[in-house]
Every structure is written in structure tokens, then in C-alpha cells.
Amino acid sequence: MTTLYSFSLLVHLIALALWLGGMVFFLVVLGPAVHELEPGVAVTTLNRGRLGLETASWIAIGLLLSTGIFNLIVRVPAAGTGISESYGMLLGVKLFVFGAMVAHHCLQVFRYAPAIASLTAALPQAMPSWPEPLLSHWRRWFLLLKINAALGPIAVLLGLALAKS
Image (cartoon, rainbow, N blue to C red; front, side, top):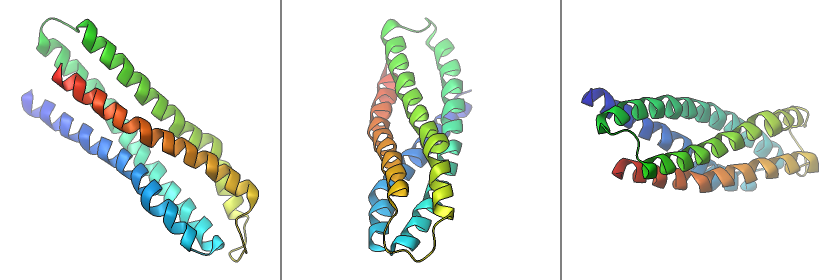
């Protein structure tokens, strides 16, 4: 069981790196880079990046959820005494942070992404500037991404605290 548990932890960490790394890449590299492009190309590039981030994020969320449940199931009986109060508190806070991150991601995908996609498809390739409705949706989308990028390290630290307890 130790090999399977170790593999599950590895997959959990890889999924975490995929999700947080995608967010950081989008915020640090892709987001600022599109400012240097013409508005028509920038809108299309940002939308394609959003689609890639959504795909990678859903894969990572699924892996994090499944490996997290597996790790908890394996770890609790291994401790022999059940879940301590401090472990339960840390786990509850971590699950709350993870739930908030998933909720923000759902808002990005189901609330703002359809409007972004439809407005992007309706735009001509050559345009002088970003249209205001599209820019407004992207601002809200980016705000949720920034919140998730801030919550991510908190979830990591809570995970480390759980591993130590």
C-alpha cells in the first residue's frame, strides 16, 4: 500500500503544479504578453489560452479531488486513532479553500467564458481597440484568476501542515 500511496501523493502534487502553474503562467506570461499584440490578435490569443487553461484546470481539479480522497482514506486508518481535532480543523479549512477555488473556477467557466467566447467570435480580426463589453468580462475573469492564484499557496501550506500532523 505504501507504493500506491506514494504514487497517489505524486499525482496529487503534479495536479497541483498543473493547476497553479497554469494560473501563474496565464497571469505572468500570457496576460501581459497580449498587451503587446494588435487588439484583434490579442483577443483571439487570450481566448485560446483561456480554453487551454480551462482544460488543464478541470483535469487537475479531478485529479486533486480523487487523489485527495484516496490519500485521506489511506492515511486515516494508518494513523490508528482516527482524526485528531487539529487535523480535522486543518482539513476543514483546506477543503473550504479548495471549494472556494473550484467555485471561482466555475464562475470563470460558466459565467464569464461563454460571454467572452461569443463576443470574441463576433469581433472582426482587424479592430482598433478592445471593445468595452469584452474588456469588462475579461477583467472579471482575471479578478477570479488572481483570487485563485492567491488561494493556491494557502491550500499548499495547509496541505503541508496536514502532512506534518
